[in-house]
Amino acid sequence: MRAILQRVSSASVTVDGSVVGEIGAGLLVLLGVGHEDTEADAAYLVDRILGLRMFNDAAGKMNLSVVDSGGAVLVVSQFTLYGDTRKGRRPSFDGAGPPELAKRLYERFVEMVAERGVQVAAGVFQASMSVALVNEGPVTFTVESKRAG
Picture 1 (cartoon, one colour):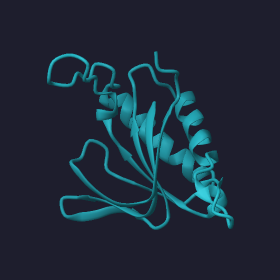
Picture 2 (spheres, rainbow, N blue to C red):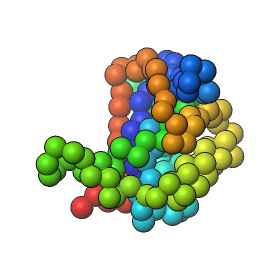
Picture 3 (cartoon, rainbow, N blue to C red):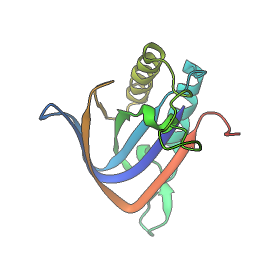
């Protein structure tokens, strides 16, 4: 699994003109599922993401996690994180998981975040979504459940 994390002061996702998920301060997580990913990958990413210290403490140092800071998480599925752009001009998505697997792991990821007591909102799997955010910092990180290579 791959995730792009963006520290935000606010973020929302809209489908067909209706806001389906929104948060105040916290993390926007763009989440991609690969064809070999399992629930263990989802659990690993949840642990890494919720524990990653990307929020400022009183001294202005990035010493707080989203949990420590009391922030929320907005999760948006994004299969294009598995786009391979090394050949030609059209990305290949061969590394992306099939929709059934990706939907199951995406939904399980959202459940696991909620099970940890973090406020969580989500987009709609396979929908055409508009994502709005105010990136604070800007602070953006990439996290993967498996080593690239």
